[in-house]
Image: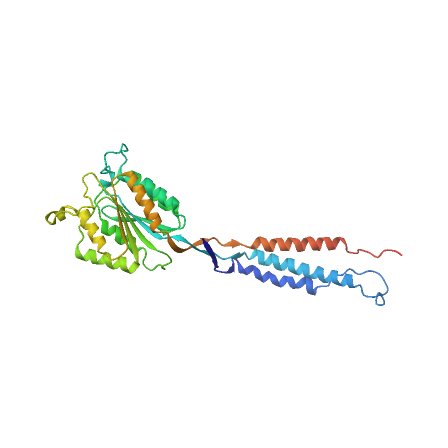
Length: 333
C-alpha cells in the first residue's frame, strides 16, 4: 500500500496575541547596564567575548518574548489528508431485511438451523473485518430502504449496522429502492477505485419498465459492478433452471436475475442454499473485487504551541545562566 500526504497548512487559533511581538523589541533597544564608580574605562581594550555574550543575551530575551507571544496565539498544523493506494473497492452492501430472511435455507440436510439473516450477518461481519483497504457503506431494505452506514473507511459503523439486524426482518422486498439508494450514494464522488454493489437477498421483485430503465441508467452512470448473493429458501426458485414461459410471473427471483443479466455491467450471481455457500460466495467476491483503489484518511490538526513554549523555556534558561555570570561589582586589585 502506497501513501501520500496532503495538508491544509498551518494556522493560528487566537492571532490577537501576536500584538505582544512588539515587546520583543525591548531587549534589543533598552540599555540596562549597571553603573560602577570608576573614573574611566575608555582606554581599556574591547572585550570581544563580552560583546558576543551581550548580543546573545539580548537576542535570547527577544526570542523568548516572541515565542511566548506565538505560543499563546495557538499555532497548529492543519488537518492532514492521507491519500492511500491499495487494493480493494468501493462497496455498498445492500442487505435484505424482509420477513422471509428469518426463514431457513433450502438445504435442509445440514444440521445447522441458522436462519438466512443470521448467516448473512455472520459472514458479512467477517467480510467487513477483512476488507482493510475497501471503502464500505451499507443500505438495508424491506418495504423501504434505509442508509445505515455511509460509504467510507469507518468499519465500526458497518459492523454496528450489521449487529442491529439481530432484531429480525419485517415487511416486503423492495429490491429496486434499495439498489437505487446505494447507487445514488456514488453520485458526485470521484472515481478512485472499482465500484461494487453487493446485494444480499432471498427474493425478487417485479420491476416495471420505468424502474428497469432508471436502474440500468444509474448502473452505467456510476460504473458499478453487481454481485448478488441469492439466499435461496426452501420454497424459493432456483436460478439455475429457467421456468416455463407461462409460469415466469410466479418466479420473480428468476425474472430479477434475467434483468440483472441484461444490465450490461459486470454481474455475478451466487445461489446460496446453506450458510457454507454464503461463506464461499463472499470469499469469491473478495477475490473478484481486489483491484487498485485510492482513498483518503483524515487526521486531526496538530497543536504546535508546545514547540514555541519549549523554545521560550530554553531561552529563559540561557538568560538565567548568563545572569549568574554577571559582574555585580569591580573586584579590588
